[in-house]
Image (cartoon, rainbow, N blue to C red; front, side, top):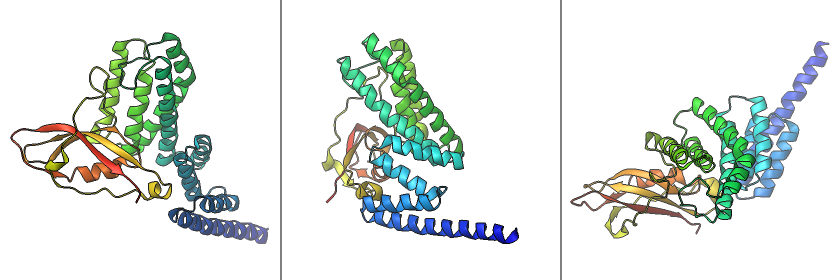
Length: 294
């Protein structure tokens, strides 16, 4: 009996060891930009040990980045079965809800002949109702997951960003302009927490209108670090902020207008270190931070 238990234990230990080795190789291939080989190794790691959390998290992130949202969701479900308290998995579920619902929101606005910056809610009542019926459950589930992630880490910036996005989505199927604006204020509250980035919407529900801050006034520029995952997947983009520059030329406030979630944190860290020529008054305008592969 004892010998049989020992054999079972040894077999499990060997499988875990093999799985960890395959995961490590998969991560190396991912860093080298060999996406399909990385995927093959990580899937093999899960065949050896279906509970390998490192392999599950890495594959889920890969699928999310490649917009394979259903595959990513299935992996996050598996993670939560193993580790119900996983902050990253709850965030991942919320991020998937945010990414898919936002796309649907823009489509619903287009059907109603609305621009992305027009004040909501969605003007066509039939389209609004259809949008709500199709997406309200997804939105509420995403918000619930993001709140769970924030319970684990109240300053988890990516979760705050997607939470604000999902509340803006919910605002577009509000029953009245007043309810829409109340949701927008709530979204901006989460977006501005701890002066962390989030999407900005003005009091009337439109995107802020501003001019670009002249780069010739910039006297110190710190370039952002290109995220390794974005480089591996050949992702490019531009992060746009509304910024306030004080009289001494220091960056006083930053509010995100747009940008890929991978680029927002390094762009924020870099721009906060920028310095401009001193002036008699504060200056407010748009700062753009491009991320381009050489």
